Length: 246
Image (cartoon, rainbow, N blue to C red):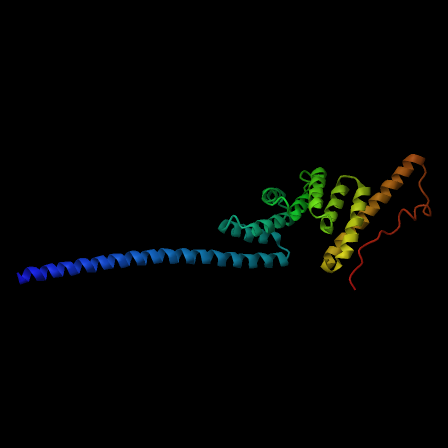
């Protein structure tokens, strides 16, 4: 009798021990899976932060293609990261990868139709592409006007509109838009870098020169006589540019 009792007690103890071990094992396994997920998530975030730093360094070095590669890796980790999509669309433009820039900008515009910067970037893409088969004045004007409806006082958009009119051959409107850009830029002069200042003033001079040439050619066709230098002084006057910072 005593032997049976000891055997039964020992058996019960073993069952309890196995049950406890199995329960602990399940808990440990569950915790391990949870910890792994947390670590993986944290690792992805750390990788994204690291890649962003690399991309910014490449941008500062004037290497948009290398920056694009870094952001493409970010989007492989997190495809729905909007900020990365926005930045890479700009980098694609700088890297002359027009089709990729177009695709991502159109997708972003569908998600954020009230973002004037997206419309403006798409217009700028069509207005400035070095690929003549991709450059499109009609589309550039369309999207620049969409951007202006949303942000009528943004001088960046007026600059884009000026270029859109310029490639479309409407030099009067191009110059008019450039002058409006200059007026708005003067009001926000503290935000303009020296590089931007140079680019904007080049746009003003370019549009003014095209207007002068077009006007002179029109007068030649009309009269058959080229204007004298004295008569052309007013037409060829120096356009009002954005003043440099003191």
